[in-house]
Image (cartoon, rainbow, N blue to C red; front, side, top):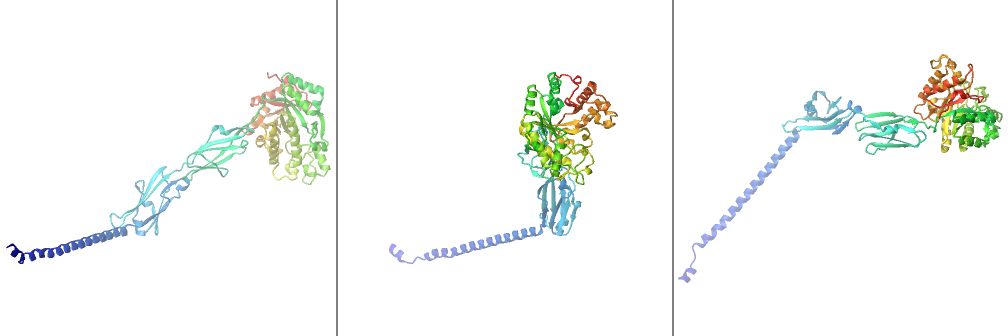
Length: 555
């Protein structure tokens, strides 16, 4: 049975094999169609999304910020003309709304062809936000521009250290200070180096002129400041109490001994010795070549011996040097054909003022006087006191100065600067005698007192009461009221020289002219000077005989 059964055809085998062959293609077809439908759906969704996004972008208004920068600092100078500018389609600009710090300012915007502008005009100090919004055709298609800016109209401050505003004459000086962050600083148009807002400017000498600073902040605000450094004058160890002594007088034993008696009794502590006088005579044993060439050196006294004698007694030695009034040099120069050394008339003749005046513009004349000054400094003289450091008195139209390219006042200042430089290595003081009237009328003799004070250690005004006109400084009779005229004139001189680096050392009168002057009149001048805050003086007597009863020991 088994064998037969196996050899007979199995009627069920075809039926069992056929179904798998028919079902498998049906399932595969269904999967393909599902995938196709899914891909179509995804593609349709992408297309729809793209169309939707395209609609949004098409609907979004096209506006663009033109100026200013999105973040800006607006200062006082930039504030009024500052305009916020937007470009775009005209309909988008017309639909735009403007708001400043949340407040609607649309009515302030000006609409033009393709441009909308809002001028800020004014705004409070501090941060601000300006927003421009323009809506498209769809609710979500609004375009917004935003400016965040700061209004700063406060000029920057320049803070200087108080100690930087006071300097010592003849010493190096540093000017230090600070400015705010993000501020630039200029001095006379040159950038000043800043370190975290701090600066220090070094000067070899205290600055004589006002310093022009300009500070600018990030907002464009500027502040300017003129800074003047007050220069303190150098002062000797003790206030000067001195007398004038001519070269022939020092050579005269009785006169010299009388001067030394005043020293020994502590009535004076300073002797002013003439180096070159009004006659042009060089009174000491000078070795200056031009002095010998023109016959000016008379050698009345030995300068080294005089300085040694006086220094041994603790006396300060002032060498008086008459500068531009120099008959000996003027006569020699004219006769030798060196006319440029001499002050002349407009017609080319020597100026006929009293004495012979040399030309303040002549380098040869200036060098001659500076050579004498430097020689005296080398030989131990403590001060050089220039006298007749001026032009001749008289109308300026009546005289000419060959080679002068500036004003006589400016030429004198240059001469003092040159002398100061020559004397600096010796630490020698420099003084300038000036007319009393120079404080009121500097043009009369080209003596600009404040400018002179910036170039010397002291100004020595000749405030002799006999030399004033009635009514000057509201004093009816100056010669008869020595206290008052000295007080008022020296108060004016002190005011004129303040902060310039010079002190006032007045010449006082110990001679009689018009009124007899004795102890009371001389003492009145000393007291007048003291009342003006000046406890120093030089007495003048052409005869070198001084009123000791007017003086008192200082101890």
